[in-house]
Length: 147
Picture 1 (cartoon, one colour):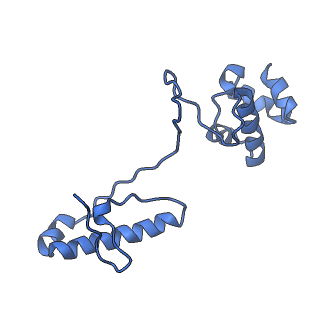
Picture 2 (picture 1 turned 90 degrees about the vertical axis):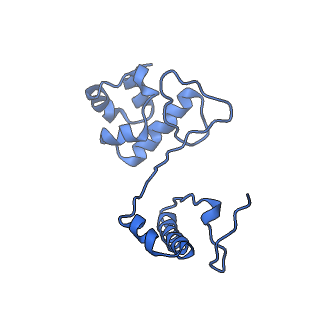
Picture 3 (picture 1 turned 120 degrees about the vertical axis):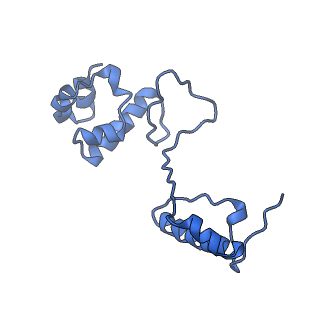
């Protein structure tokens, strides 16, 4: 099957020139992701239709788009690929502040900061991993980590 036939079967043959411009052929088709199609100017509804058809070509009817595995990596049983963003924050002046505050007060300050950040991230369906020793109880006290 060629790209023209595939796009035509989806009722999306208007994208043939775009695929040709970006040199997308059947050997590249299975590696396309939502980001690739978006970069090519394909609107959301048509991207979803194309991604569903690509999943059907690969035999994945799960309903979720999975990015292509990097070359040379074999899929592992039970493995799952997820997009993740990692953020590291260096708080300016924290070292000097640590020298000035009582350790418990400092722990409370850092805990309040982490809770504020976690609440902001949660509003966007994100998650902040806070070590158990830094979590607070509903009463606001630090949970004691078992050693």
